[in-house]
Structure formats: C-alpha cells, structure tokens
Image (cartoon, rainbow, N blue to C red):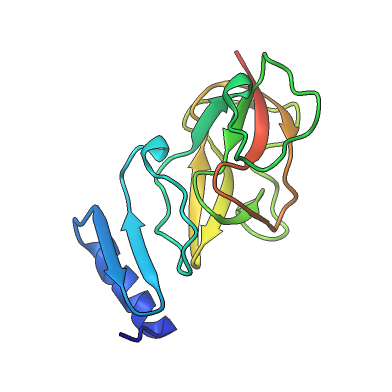
Length: 159
C-alpha cells in the first residue's frame, strides 16, 4: 500500500471530522497510529515515520517525577516547581503569530486554562493550556524550536 502526502492529509481530515478515537493503518513501509481524547499518560511515545494526531491537553509532571527517558532538563531543578511538558512532538511557539507578544514570560502569573504556548504538529496549531495556577519561573525552549514528547517546556511555581 502506498500513501502519499495528499492522501495522508485527506485521511487525517476525515478522521478529525469523525468520532473515531483510535485508528491504525499499516503498509509495507509505514505504520500510522492516531489516538485522540485519551489521557496524555495513556499514550506511549512511539517512533513511527508518520506523526500521530495532537493530544488534547498539556501533561504536567512534578520535577521529582520526571522520566529519565525525557530529554535532559536544565541542571539544578527545584522540588517546589512543576514541569510543564510537551504532550506531543511538534514545533514550540511562544506567541500566537510572528511579531505578537508571547503568551507568557518568566515571572508572569498564569491561571488554569490559560493558553501558555502553541505546539504545531502537521500544520495544526495546538494551543496548550495551563493545568495549574502559579508563576512561570523558567521557559526552557526557544521560540520556533522542535520539541519531543515529554520534553520540559517550562517550569511553574504553583500558587
């Protein structure tokens, strides 16, 4: 089975319009798995040639619970901070568009549900919302940088 880029986009559009929660398609030289509306922790990262559909929410882990498989974080993490991690592979954007103000800056107070960044995956802009209120203490990723699943994007002091 051969699947070109246009066919893949059409398939993903159809899946987005449907109620299908999980979908798997395998060919001779590829495997496509799409999972959505699942808890972020239930989706195991897999290395496949085609990216999966974006996850709906932002995964947040305590600094002490960080996985050793996650990309390396800055040295000297504090136990009073909460890691905000990438729920998918994509490109990290701090602002809604080039030339516009960043969603958050170091020292800003954030509220649960507030948009804190965008992750672009397969030309889809996914706004990531904070799952806790607090103060942004560190932003560890530069604007326009590719990120991996589980990579720490920023650290927040709850409160």
